[in-house]
Image 1: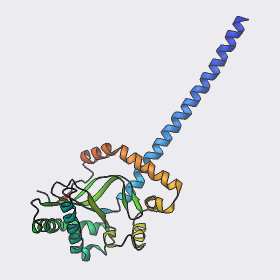
Image 2 (image 1 turned 90 degrees about the vertical axis):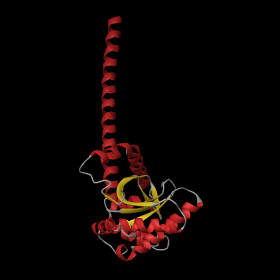
Image 3 (image 1 turned 30 degrees about the vertical axis):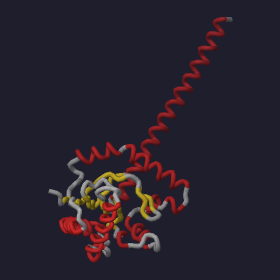
Length: 244
């Protein structure tokens, strides 16, 4: 009798262990598949957006009232100075070439305004690729990740910054009063990328989840992305600069 009970217990445990192993294997496969999908979707969708836009940032020296005021003055002056060259551009390479050629003039405009207003610090202008966290633009949400951007740094550049899109030229579009900006962006990036940017406007729970997935993945891998950018010679970074 004892042997029968022992044998039955052994067979039961053997069967249960097989089921546990199968369940564990299925769980591992599911986890790997989910991670792979998350990586592919997050990387490709964010890259599709980033590869088709150029951002424009003006970084204030600090958050003091005076530093923030002069930042606004400088961003208006720089945008006005290049409106004729950039506002009608429909080619990202053309925009990049124009920005690169005019970095010294942007820096000069900013520095002259600073000196006219009595500030002792200067400005630097760069066209670079760098990591940006989640940013809202009108009713669009840009996921975090590496983006190409013109950055005008005022003094220490530790204050709040102002930004817009130089390409497509949304810097020159009323983002609150019309749909022109959305239309320009929709023509520039993929359908999935555009829908992701507009996930709040569409009020889609699925798109909101997808955006959070991209946001989580890009933020989680910020050090890895930055390291890859710094060590991969095939990736252009800090390629266009007017800083000595």
